[in-house]
Image (cartoon, rainbow, N blue to C red; front, side, top):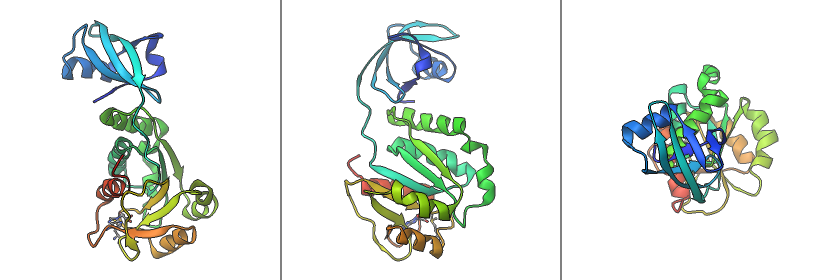
Length: 238
Ligand code: SAM
């Protein structure tokens, strides 16, 4: 936890917060903090600053906070990701949030197992928890927006055109296409396939919607590896 993320309900007065639970545990066990110590804090979807410990006991900690710094710039990226298996989903959400993705659409695809859509990790509160872990890791406060789209064809035909309008459209696919561009600086919509890859029909539907197929060279990477490689290649300055 490189940032203590504050939520509106933590405030007991305009500049004072009271924290308990996981954050209290982190402050006492990891920081071994004491009254007077300054900690880095940030308001969810707001600014970052510092919090001075005013009182601390085994039930709660109170901090006097001053917020003045804007969070890091969001990536100019909308990510369209075929739903990963539940075990990987948690990690992927955390890592994407830490990398600065602010809009993520989890979609169905032929090679996504139907049972993946039943996982409790897709519930709103669970997704929120994983995003929070990513924000705490990356010292960011801006919560990503996550959309779930369980039908590939209606999504690509009816929703994707407006979602991706005015952006560069790329689909990461190991076969064919051109080398993934580097440092593109423009708003981008990027589609990434499931562990088994997009089938040809899906790549063709994305191409019909204006998506250019791009590859990362001859090595086929796991989704959790391909994601940071693609993002750091497209947006090295972020
Ligand atoms: N056998 C699958 C195939 O050939 O498409 C492999 C899929 S890969 C494990 C999962 C996803 O990661 C792919 O659908 C693609 O979006 C992305 N990916 C992995 N390696 C890639 C590469 N070398 N170039 C482009 N995309 C890649």
